Image (cartoon, rainbow, N blue to C red; front, top):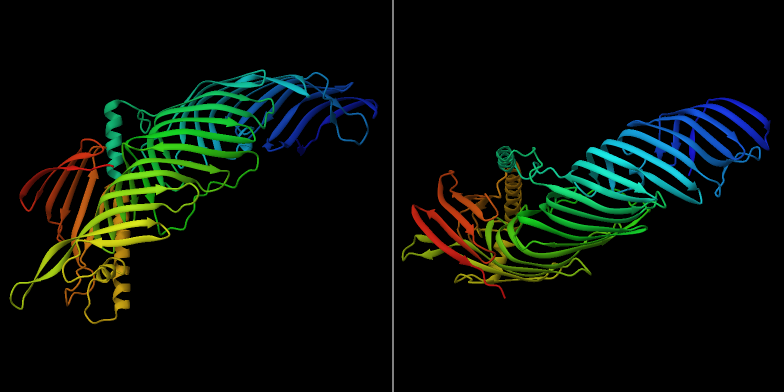
Amino acid sequence: MRSVGDTPFAAGIAQTALDPIVTADLSIQAPAFDRIKGELLTGRLHYEGEKLSLADLALQTEAGAYSGSGFIPVDLRGGQQAPQLVLDQPVDMALAGTTAQLEFLTPYFDIIDSLNGEFDLELALSGTFAQLIRNGSLTVRNGKAEILAMENSVMGISGRLALEDNILTMENLTAYTPQEQIGGILDRLRQKMTASLAGTNTGQGHSHLAVSGTMDMGQFFRPYFDLQLAGEHIYFATPLNEIEAIGTAHFEIVGRDTINISGEFVPDPGQLTIHLDLSSQEEPAVGEPGGRALLVYNIRVPFYAGAIVRTNEIDAEIEGEITLTAMGSEDFRYAGTIENIAGNFVLNGHDFTFEEGTIFFDPTEFNPQFNIIAETEIEIPQSSGGEKVKWVTATVRMLVSGTLEEPNVSFERIPATYTESSLFRLFALGMPTDNGGDPGLASAGWSLGNMILREIEQDTRRMSGLDRFQIQTGGSLGQSGQSGIGIQSIHLGKRLSPRLYIGMQADPTMTFNQYKVVYRLNRNMSLEGGVEDGLYKVGYRIRYRY
């Protein structure tokens, strides 16, 4: 422990350097004790016979003020030698303070960026420096914590922490997580209307987080944690908003030099969204490891009630269970299975629909195994008996298997006169026609156009709060004379609840000609109804699970 500061004081010194008696008035500018920094420390001291008495201590910091008095055993004998603490003599100090920030605590916990609020502190030290005994309490009101691993804040922290014989016990420590930042404009408007009708605070909703357990403060800056966290409808977002979720959490935090964080997070139905920008190279800034404690994570996330995955090209609903593990600053490892995939993805302007899907994660390496079946529609020429060619719609089924590093792609229901290679050329290279031009130039132009459209789709979904906004472009295999990208249809969709989804389709003139409503009965069955070209359709959909 080191202490520094600019220390002008008036002092009276009696006897000799080998056995001094010192009386002084303190006024220390910018005092610093290890990582704790102050602005001004004042008070009175008297030293005699290895006993340093302190009275009327007043410490001003940027965020608070503290007072104290008492005595500590110190050996000031020895002339120019540094003062030495006497380990086997009694200590008796009392400190109290009020602050808006826990400056003396947060510098020692690298995972906490800031902890603000209204804090009242009392601390009494007794025993000896060889076996120091701490007692006191900490009361917090209207607290707000910024945690480096979370994009969102923890708000409304309130409660009391009681310190008795070095054991810090959490007494009724509660908080909540604001939820109003979820989604786009439509989501925020719906949330504010719901909060207004329910009479809840803006952003709080039904969120509730409670912390219980103890911390052994025998080694004050290296405490032993034995904490339990339980929350209902709590909101969580990672630093770049790749994952947003509302759900129920149960965690245990145990350890000192190695701190194990284990437990379970169960998302509310339909309230887990995974946003992935596969083209971005930006990494979340969660800070450098502080080297004081090794954090070990083991978190189970079951989402059998449904989760949403969104990327520039994918809008899908998934079910399954994933376990997240990590040690220290290493990347999270994933283990588990994602199954029952439903939704859509866009591949070079073609809108594919997931029919079946399973993804397996192996925790030893990030190389998931796939088993996915998806379908799309393309236009193919059909002779009408004369010179005029009629274009009709055909369904193509794509099968993806293997691993992320070594995928296998094949096709079923291949239209007559076409081959798998021609379908690869269409879907993978993005070349819709063969009109005698430079195939490389045609592919580059088509891909650039689709890239621009995907950015427009992503920005529109983010700004509007729509779950689906996709522009389906043309891409037939032999339609001569066609150049550039032709917009065939525009799809819009929104989940009004975890069970209810509505969708619309418009032609390039924004004339809506198809409407769809899907109500999910359970994880395997849903009812579908809609209107297409003036005709009403009602049906059901069953997913078979093996």
